[in-house]
Amino acid sequence: MLISSFFLIGIIIQSAYGEGNIEIKSFALEATETGYQINVDAAIELNSTLEQALEKGIVLYFVIKFSLIDTKWYWVDDEVARSKLRIGLSYNALTRQYRLSHRSKSQGFDTLNEALQELGTQHHIPVEEKLKLDPTIEYSASLQVWLDASRLSKPFQLESLRSKEWNLSSEKKEWRTKLPVASSFPIHR
Image 1 (cartoon, rainbow, N blue to C red):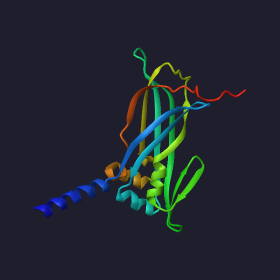
Image 2: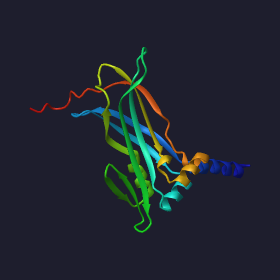
Image 3: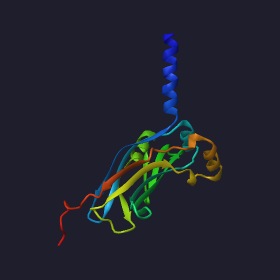
Image 4: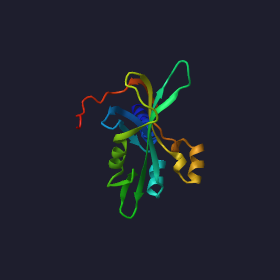
């Protein structure tokens, strides 16, 4: 009985690890001299299917998306600011290195864990203001991190439609917030 209990616990732990996961650990919206930026810290784990695809040369693209919505009771919700960062994760079998590519930058890593840790730690992501933002208004904000299956080749896109192993996403974080004020920055004269 005791042996079967340990066996069952082992299966549960193994299947939980094998599923892959994205969990947003922390995030912050900050004011800068030129506008706003978002900092995101997420824990990203790939399942065995995604790891195998990566090792066979498939580039996995991840997206970090932040939105700021002005909700008015008398009108339609309006997205007033947003940030969308797409990061490619690849593996080079010749050099045995993992590579992250985004914003015309590329960085190599010796292990998948190092690459995933860097992928999950994205700071100073600029927020694009679509309309003039007002620090006195409370906005609705949302943040999500996911594997972008639409960037995969067509056969893998079809596979992602019928297999949950290709659908990796964090829960969507939603909250109400006022904008931080950039009063602590020095005034340049």
